[in-house]
Amino acid sequence: MFAPFSKAYYLGRLYVEPHDGEQAAIHSSHHEEVNEQLYATGEGVERLDLPLVMKVGATHLSVTGDEAVPERTLAVPEDRLDAAGVDNPPTLREVLLAKRDVAAEFLSAEGPLA
Image 1 (cartoon, one colour):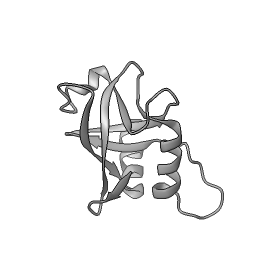
Image 2: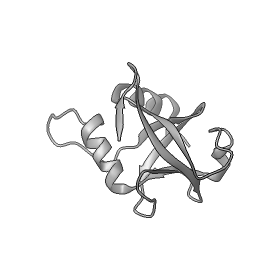
Image 3: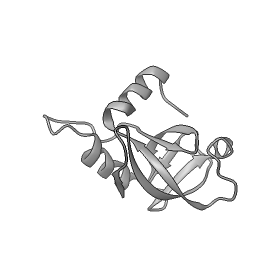
Image 4: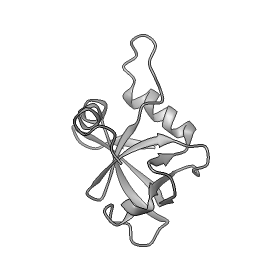
């Protein structure tokens, strides 16, 4: 779903659509899979429900898992779509996924992102 892109990000393509929740979300199984493959260290017991940090346009989003979100879709709160540069949802967009260390910096510096 995501491929290496830079020192800080992985690159993927997801449909971006409006979401009535307060936080951005992807399908729960994808969220857990990404956590396990890209964020886990492989040392001991690790949580697989930690927020992912994704960048759409110029906006960083804290992303959780939600069973109601279709596969290969990033559901974004409607009030964040304009900031993410999404004009005509649902639309297939390039999405950057922050690597583990970068995501940890965003989450600790900003608190939970929108």
